[in-house]
Amino acid sequence: MKDFRFSYKFKMACKEDVLKLCPNIKKKVDVVICLSTTVRNDTLQEVKEHRVSLKCRKQLRVEELEMTEDIRLEPDYRLNPVLRKACKADIPKFCHGILTKAKDDSELEGQVISCLKLRYADQRLSSDCEDQIRIIIQESALDYRLDPQLQLHCSDEIASLCAEEAAAQEQTGQVEECLKVNLLKIKTEMCKKEVLNMLKESKADIFVDPVLHTACALDIKHHCAAITPGRGRQMSCLMEALEDKRVRLQPECKKRLNDRIEMWSYAAKVAPADGFSDLAMQVMTSPSKNYILSVISGSICILFLIGLMCGRITKRVTRELKDR
Image (cartoon, rainbow, N blue to C red; front, side, top):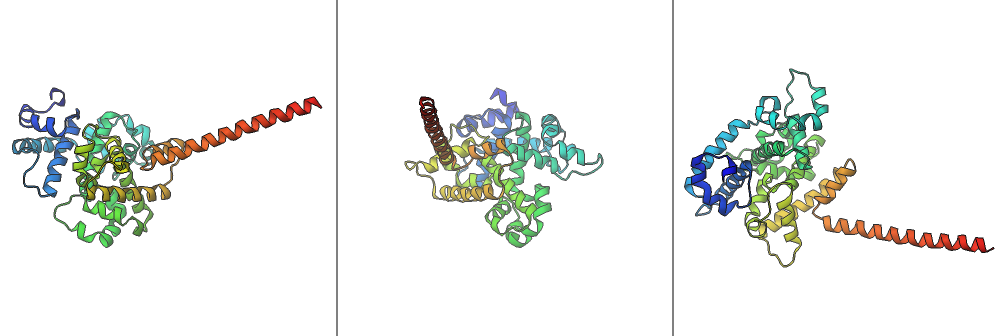
């Protein structure tokens, strides 16, 4: 654990927990997310015995507080020095248009962070920036109030469709899940766009979809434990397990995955890819990737055969004309 740069107390308290629950994770931020998610899932499922030891949970809380202190979820990225440093190359590269439109003294109201979140979903961010954005996405996925753009554009929908979830004392992602489930009922284009973005983010990293991750925690442990989190790897692992008839997923996990597939299919229809690179990314991250690729491959083969036949016919016609 020497590369994690944790405190000595944390290393001593959580060494066994990390080896048991997060064996293939190397980055500090991913270790915190892994352990925190395990604690959250056990709490939500009201298990009798937590998988993370009590001494580790205490030290984990210290690390979480320190990380929260470093990575404040400010709506204006300029007030977050850690994020600015980590994403100093990514912000001008991907969010230049937002910066040029904003005045020096204006509040960006989360626009830059929203921009970076989209690039996170596209798996285009640098490693350091990706780490910071992952934490922001995970925290806002649990509590909609930490997402200024979602609050701004979906306030009416939250009030009308998800009032009960929003009134809950403890936010564990229920408002976000409510908006996803009611996606077809959302009429406001900007709100619909925000919800579609949330779905896109969840395809990139199951950790930022707390409801799905809670439902599939056991299956991830059993079938995808060796898969490094992030960049859609564990989500792809679950999708492969879902398609494999030999694998029996937990009923709730299977249901949630099928729900997500329907949502992603709808999202792909109403939010088509803008360019070839986006189209390629959309195909490669699609739950129906194998089917789509097989159709594309079949189409290419058919075109090749047609071209081959046309070439032979052309040669024969040319030869006959010469013989005349």
